[in-house]
Length: 214
Image (cartoon, rainbow, N blue to C red; front, side, top):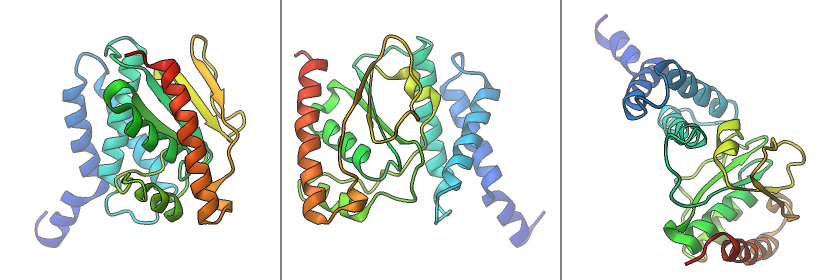
């Protein structure tokens, strides 16, 4: 295969995903089987593709998402030691409340916790108003994207905080579950989104005071 056809084949999603699976297979060798790595990579791509409007960077996002899922899987099996508490924030679309909570937690906690976020029905992108009010306090979420809720990240979490997603989050013993009643930023004006941001910040500060002991 030569010329344009060969170039298209080299750049096809399948070939890019296979290469991603090879890289991740090396990274997680001895912890996760190659078959599982490949399944998680292609699963992650398919899940993100359901809502993505722009497919250009989807394979690289799928690799990033798959790496985080594989890390969570290895953590839940005790193959990767968790050195800090794992916190998972879940809302419906992972485009507003849970993204704000994750960004604020990373900012306030630094490397004292590890944060993930997910959505029971992930949206296409982070809400522009959410990105704007976070940028007002110097928090940048341009590299973040809505991710579907998966079993592996729930299993790896020490604390799971849900926000309006009902019973979508599976329950496992030994984990701390909290449900934060917060307005949906998608239904608010900019001042309303700011109020939700500040409310989340207060809740995160209380959560960290309980989870992290200097």
